[in-house]
Image 1 (cartoon, rainbow, N blue to C red):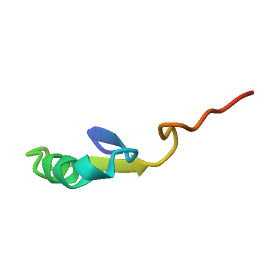
Image 2: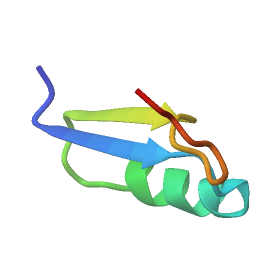
Image 3: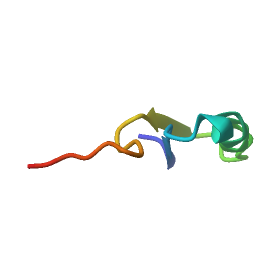
Length: 47
């Protein structure tokens, strides 16, 4: 199990490159990076 988990929403593609670069630059060696597209703006979930 990784020591650090980074959850990155992908609903703003204009910031995705900078976010990925920042996450991958972490000095902790044991990082899990999860990128998800759920919860995009304009998407409404009803139960």
